[in-house]
Image (cartoon, rainbow, N blue to C red):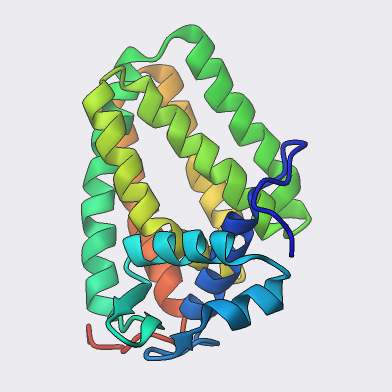
Length: 226
């Protein structure tokens, strides 16, 4: 069995297991009610129970998995309406963050944001969703830190952790990474101009476009918002 710590800057094994299971849940490969057996998952991923349990714990915290008495971990049932409610809140939090960041970011922080945006070009060109997802995370994290408000950073990151699987899933929609990057570019320009109101407006649109892409990319959730 492989230990949890892989070293050399590699992701933890629990993170790899979590991402793999999250992708399968949001794509419909694992349907609601499916039992997630620790021993079977350990054999599948070549891991001990420790990273498997940590992955399941994180999935439970994000609402993708439920821990049930005598049954252990099972895939949770999540509706489209619930996910859209989460995206709606996320849009407002992200808009608040980018508005403040446009006003408060230091020149170095603005430069870093632009660099992160430029770095994502290759990931889009090569259709590397994993790399774009990683850079997308860093892009939004830079905006949170740019608020210079520790409490907002804490709350924004907690919500992003809860939404991580859904925000990653929307990138499976064929044209979404390219559109997402274009939207990022508009946001960056507004931030560099110090136009907080325009940046907030663009960020809200960005998140609602993400929500729509998620709806198009997944078949697992009950389509109950129509």
